[in-house]
Image (cartoon, rainbow, N blue to C red):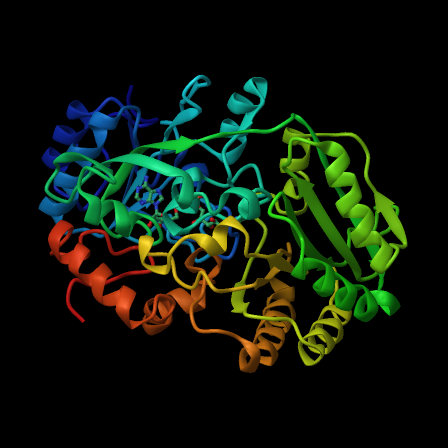
Length: 471
Ligand SMILES: Cc1cc2nc3c(=O)[nH]c(=O)nc-3n(C[C@H](O)[C@H](O)[C@H](O)COP(=O)(O)OP(=O)(O)OC[C@H]3O[C@@H](n4cnc5c(N)ncnc54)[C@H](O)[C@@H]3O)c2cc1C
């Protein structure tokens, strides 16, 4: 295969080098001026508008090493993209080389061993569609178009986090192409230092071509739903939720979203609190009893607990956040939610308009039982995470939407713990170099730096929340 304009690309890069690359790979090359270039360079966040000099759409894992060699030979910056959902826009680059792994999206389920082998380009939806027929699920995130690669390398939080931990906690092995072009495995028994760094350290160490995950039994007719609260009852609802969460069993994961639904929704055009839950236990009765206990503390204004297929529930947020929306995100983690914090949440979330939202994740459970030094991921002690974000269409709204996210985030900082989730850092935070590094804390950063020095001493993989080989 070759790109829309197979020959004679008008690049300042050495043309013979490009032609050599073209003949050594199975995938396509696209450059500015090619018919499909503009679509190929787009990422999920509409605020990111970068123009790579060359886009390589890999069609085989063997395309990765020649692309790396080409990037090293030209000295051009190299960005890696899988799902393209990185909020900070790290899945692309201006005037450099973009290696797009999106076509390597096979998913193979070994139902007997409960292992799932996933190409780096798969989306979360690809994985759910492959595992659901086996009544199995891999713990991933909550929007189906998100790429498994970026999500896993940062952590991976979703509706199965409390019973089974983050996505990285269920990573068994990965295949990685290093900066020197060598393909290596990473697991507890093979390149264990690399395996440690991959679980939270992002794309800093190489190009991951595939992952193997543990999967768990999950009834596809999942017991899940949403309890909706009108604004005047948020304070009462949150206080009773926090009390309930203190003794909630691991099988239940909850996620509280504050947003103004689209105006054409039946409930649209005013800020609402959506308390979503998913029950992963084998006994539905036990789940119903648990949710009855949650509701008894503060009966919702609208309960939506219809029969739900797992795949449907896993794509419930998709429509609100299509590719191309403008986005700015910030996050923080907390060891508690006290009255002052609840008051701040109610005040800021009550003052939003359509196009912003905040998600409060209840952590703990299996997530919290993973020893702090088992992975590069920071802060297992967090009881709650808050992700504050926007998803709006019009550039004229940038200042207002970004301003709301920043104002709310700043108000929560005095209550926050150290450590942030790199996958929820926005573009400004990514550029503010120190912030990405601060997300890990000193001890982890020192260890990550050692791994970086060993596997990518020249910092070829730097279009990410970068861990430089020398600080
Ligand atoms: C709408 C939306 C919903 C989200 N929901 C969740 C959620 O529920 N839970 C959660 O945990 N996160 C969630 N996220 C955050 C998400 O995890 C990150 O944005 C993540 O970076 C997306 O991965 P990607 O592969 O799609 O991104 P990309 O933009 O393709 O890549 C992101 C970065 O990851 C690295 N990378 C990508 N592929 C590779 C590879 N093959 N090898 C090495 N490095 C690679 C690169 O450094 C790249 O810069 C969500 C994001 C969005 C936009």
